[in-house]
Length: 309
Ligand code: NAD
Image 1 (cartoon, rainbow, N blue to C red):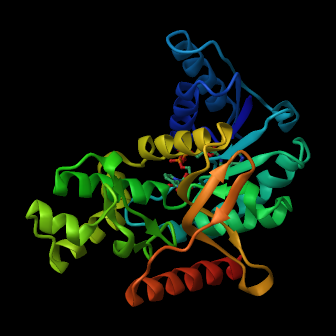
Image 2 (spheres, rainbow, N blue to C red; image 1 turned 90 degrees about the vertical axis):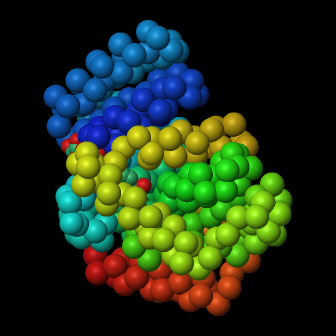
């Protein structure tokens, strides 16, 4: 499978490494408007391939060379500087997506291609990419709150002393400051969280839950403060999404795609079944009134920002 990555900065490079390590691609092409950066990334990654899979890795200087790509990953655009929110990137990255999508669509098979959007503010960029590409919403997929859900899972795993693989926990809504921690659906080995805590004699009071929510929502800010940007986590998320798409795993992931049409359409993260046709089913989890209100707030913020561009 040929996979194109557009934008090869910190995130695009980490995504390329993660994609390479899945062994799912026979060819990866890297495009960046900074051609020198793309060439250097392809060279470096090519050296790494000698230790993993035989795979063709090339930088390309024009969009014609992405022809034949079945999946296009968009990781181009401005990132947050310390103190900036994802939504502060809105106008700059809307220009980036508007530049990239038509050029991608001129060179891919619209009947089959799947676009993975990573650029922030994620949900609005998914809406814009879907609108400009005219692809079905099921094939324009944002990584959404996959990373936020992973962060929640890691924190819970440490708090509860249970492997992340035995925890089902979702962060929903905006990949941003209004994300919603879906406490109502958390279960540990199929046991509801409260029951599990009783059996394990662990106390998880509201104050602790609020602290966990804060840590999940602020994880990116802390990482940006410490190392300038985040990249490893999102690399892992894209690789996971790729496995689900390429191997038709029909796994439930909190990805962002556009739901609805016209003025009420909005992209945000919900648990969705992902297979080789893209998003094949949207699911509704248990929500308490606070969580439902949180999702409505997320949808409003995303829609308002989309209407601003
Ligand atoms: P970066 O500045 O390191 O790299 C961005 C790259 O995009 C640069 O190499 C730049 O030349 C390229 N670029 C800009 N405009 C372009 C265009 N029109 N065509 C082609 N290439 C173009 O930034 P980064 O840290 O790699 O972040 C990239 C994006 O990923 C940001 O929007 C960031 O917020 C986002 N991000 C998303 C998640 C997530 O969970 N979805 C996580 C981390 C970062």
